[in-house]
Image (tube, rainbow, N blue to C red; front, side, top):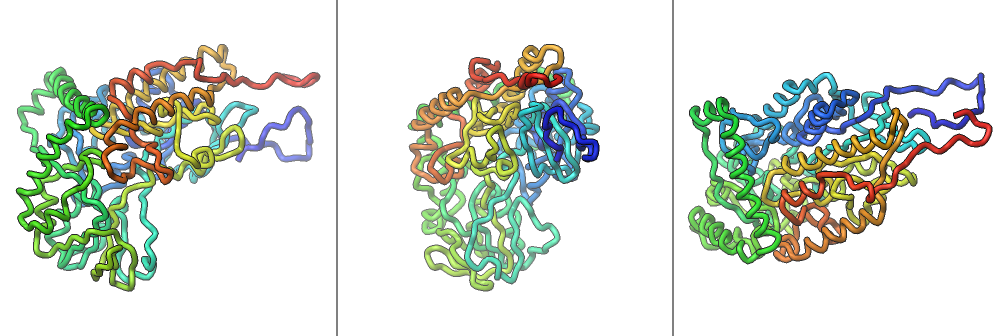
Length: 517
């Protein structure tokens, strides 16, 4: 780490302070958020930046999650950037490999690759109050930056529950986000733990080859039909020749999801219509009344993430599948014991148990003004001003920060709104800094409190609070720190400009009497 500046005293026998490369902006992560930030910086004329990536390639969650059947549950033309439309999506809901290909294309088309620092995982970030900059230590070296854009993403670090006896399991164990493609699942007794979005996608893919598949289900999800199809050559040619048609299609998709958000946040009774469709979808696929009852949710649709699949229910109805309606409680050798006492033997355990969303690991590595880590600041729940900036952490912007998640629309819409906020933030720094003088902005505690009080007040009437479920949107303290309680239009309006009244302006301390500036 660079030595801290200690004033004018001189010691010729002491080693010279280490110097590290300095950039104006350091971006952490190269998924949608990180690449979007890099592209926006270029559009704003900022060339002095790097993108720090812990892996060996770009892609973020769409690089790491390559389990069988991995795909997006948002239509492709909405799950892409408005400034980078893609006429060649092969399906209306594209798979992981095509989304990752889109991100690789963005990296090349916008000349981001020279700015990438692969295998540079952030291990420590410390704010230097004397020089008004961040000191960053990575697995690939150290550097300093005037401003940091954290785009590590909420779906980047898998969450595996602590199960007694798991360490003694003699077979293969892995999480869906770290799929072991080298292990042959054919003829194996497979135990799947969890029924979230990944399990709904990979279970139908691995079920046909399994000797036995046992699904440990704590809570059944609401599942709707997946209206997916291959896009025709005519569609792709039309979109390529007339880009306006992509914008029209995207606008229509966006409008429908704005209406869905209205049902989630203000008129939850409208969700009853969708619930009836989901029950019909289940009844059409599962004839066994006992299994159908086990797969029927007892909470309001939308309280947990709504899943899309045409193959999940048929897979669970196959003879080689058993659904255990309780979570995994204990492992005894190759025997798995559910919370209700049911036992099942397995050769492989696959966890589809989600991610560390409400306790992001990167927060443990970031130290702010007062010497405390971000994790310590967030010990009672994540909070940020407009989901982007954090009290006590100057010039640190988080893409997909607290309460920016969506229950029914594309996260690229939120990311683009935050990128507009980033651009205005940089303009404000330029205006305040004058002739290159160091300057930083840090949100006032009162502004962060007011913003989050408003968010929590609005969340109280949404389906995520009134729907009668326990979801990963809610942290250990029972606070929803994940979801945005409004439309993407409202979020875009809220992040259009930086309001300096919500910030303190930090400048270097004036030199002491008799000290050279």
